Length: 241
Image 1: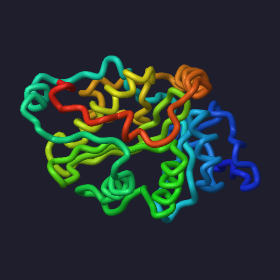
Image 2: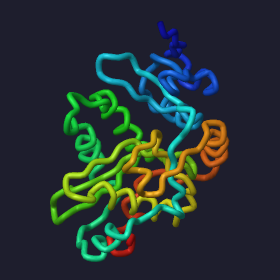
Image 3: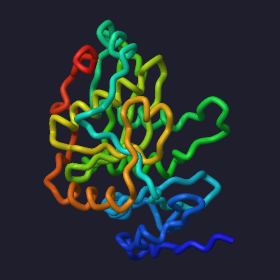
């Protein structure tokens, strides 16, 4: 039987040391608490994130290896680069945050449910209102065809989820986000757990201790709080090739 620390509702900044996370399942650290903005921001500053399904208590994770993007060195495969040169989509930030989250929450093929619960939707919408959660969207005319959302603290960005409603939709959003983060001196984008899809775009794996050291340093730096819509502008897909 797994015995986990349960978080104190009265202490939103109190988490167990990440070194005490379980080996199996990898990174499971604690349960309980809530999804208040104060607790979420405290978790991210420690390299911890929530992930659970609707029939579970809130579960908090810090995997032994963390998947990240070096925003200066994201890889664009040759076929994708050719496709980007002919793409006429518009790319925006923070123009449809709730819509991106709902699209990410939609069950995927061969999946019966979603980990992005109604409580999660409400919690990250609150962070968006506070200027800490952001979305990047790809638009084909008036149709939202891809997007990514996540959390920014200081000069650190934590990617939460992305979706595609058309071929390469999520890739365009991810590439545009990395391009902007590099321009703004955000060196890392956290992608949490490795997948073949992320690795083909240049994602790297970083040991937890090294990742948490970087997080501690980067979250202490001055950030860009508030809407990113104007600052982000509307880069063209060809610029990402």
